Image 1 (cartoon, helix red, strand yellow):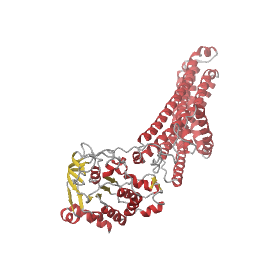
Image 2: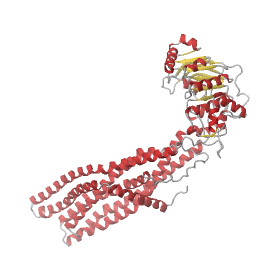
Image 3: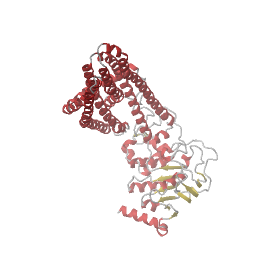
Image 4: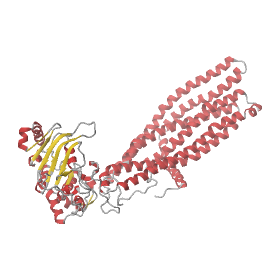
Length: 634
């Protein structure tokens, strides 16, 4: 998207004003009683402004300068009483303010939530991360800005009326001196409102676009790493961040222009009043009237004007933009054209993943990436490995030698001095309480984690010593949250087969784990898969068939069947038991432990390994787990 010109942005600001004004009139028209009460309290408050300067002038001219101290003190007492009355009126103003502010906030929340629910029903696959910003940040900002704006606007209106009436009552010539600079400053200020609204709009759009991008990246990080799109994604996020910075700088420049108008309206009247003092005295203006005029300017009119300009320049433009966005008048983010639904490499919601045929190079993920950031924890393989990259003949499939591991230097070890040997072709079930370290064990065997002490060997070689890409040929890890990307079902199944597989092998693996029924419902192996419409169990079936098809002799199933029913789980586990190779399963049902050759019981202190019957005699924890599983089953 080409950046818009300044005139285009200003037209957008005027357009937002035109869209909001009819709604504002309807909102305020429905609350005339509240506005009347607010106006009444404000009128009472303006009496304090009028009496403030007028009483000072009378106290000086009729009292102290005339030698009548008592009269002067009485007029000052009148000014003091006006302050008390103004404070009382101010309390009434705040009580009336709630009748305007809270209905606005409630109405905005209803609009945002209703619109978000309609979008979610219309497109369940699309996750609108920006709605969080609209509900939590923008509606509260609109509420606070509206409250401040109402307070400031009615304060300036009634304060200015009281001050100007007071100046006219003292000496009409005073208005000729202070009026022109006030009007000039207000005109300059009003000229900045539309451009500032446009820049504020740009800033909010950029902020929403960046928040939505970060939400999409967080939800699709496995897709991004799987397709080697890290640089592309980082570049897009950087462009959006730069757009937000640019919008903030443009907004700051217009804020500086607003400060200039404030100086003209706020300081020039006082300077002109001082400069014109001899001329005013020659024309009959008294010292008391001059002091009263100075009181009106410095104590009432100029502070109210300063507050009005600050509020309108910041809160007013922000309120205009937010209301326009929350009521449906927003458009796309500046500085970047979001990809369409079919654009390759788009990251939009859960289902938008870079397609394998996308028009950018697909780099293999980093082998030592963080587990949750790598799909199935298995990178793409390199077709031609070196002569020394194969498994060591006769070596155990998996071997742990006095392994100790902790998540951090000062953390309590999750595994301590663990020794374990798993032979080729063996099926090992790993059981234990939640959080005891079962997933950590699979991460160590997969080479995703490095032990603090000890050694982990897979097929005779250190788990993390394989050449880049080669682990996909030797071991696969299927985590509990199965990874499925947007593409054909066949492409998903071949994801862990670096050299591909014949069609009959693909069909055989799908049949073995029980995926055929789902494949038929989707339209066959060449049908496009949408991850967002699949259940967790369906995604697990696809990941299991993918692992079954892979050439890896070591398969790690980290609760990879937890979303399947017992019958489907048994079929999948028997398929892996009949498949050549070694299987390590983190079990969550007693049936999985019974089907395994051996069971490893982890209790956080030491591990016990043996068959199901042996462990019933040797491990109290295993007996407790078996009893718990049987109770849950009943």
